[in-house]
Image 1 (cartoon, rainbow, N blue to C red):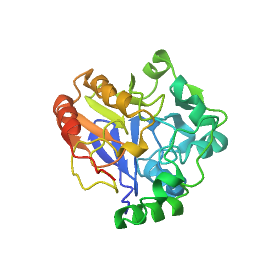
Image 2 (image 1 turned 90 degrees about the horizontal axis):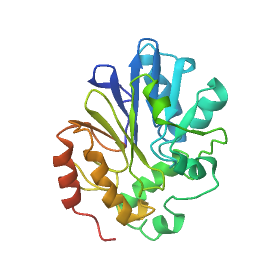
Image 3 (image 1 turned 135 degrees about the vertical axis):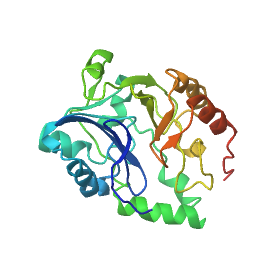
Image 4 (image 1 turned 180 degrees about the vertical axis):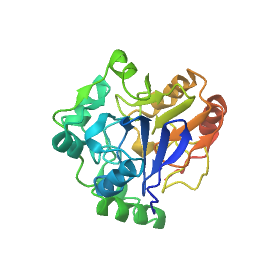
Length: 252
């Protein structure tokens, strides 16, 4: 679980940064920009570094959009909100998770009973070191609206994809890129599959609903997938969703 923290340009002004175990996305328009997700708390140095590598400064961030309130996606949210006054925005249905009122996250018990497996053990060591045992709470988090999103750098459009969490959101970009968060990924430290897939069931708040929400990803006909975990994938979203539905899931 190494990180290059090198922004990879996926379309004009659209960059994916691969953190050690989760990704974030930078949407640049001149000196202003929007970011989608922010890695683990332990990724903060890499997160800031990736922004500055593009000639940008955190104080000019128009907003941090959160696909969902799990700790591996919200790691820099509180720092940006408190330190730079950056608006941190997620779906209204995700606000309980963002503020710490709700806990829709894999439990320590679910992890510990599987930790005897080498792959799970290595991942567990990493997430603890990265601050994963202490979820980031953002009391000042707000809910986005379609109108607000349309005015942000990158003009992201929200696709409600509840199931992984109650307010999970994917973001469709005008370039044909789709930030899928954890609704659909292309890899994960616990997975042996390379390519479109769903996360292990223990990570989902409502597994059935998460499966049905894959249909929402088809809207807009995206051709480039920017996942919350794994590599950028150039593939029609319909094909990616079909493959994700068929991908094997570990039965442990």
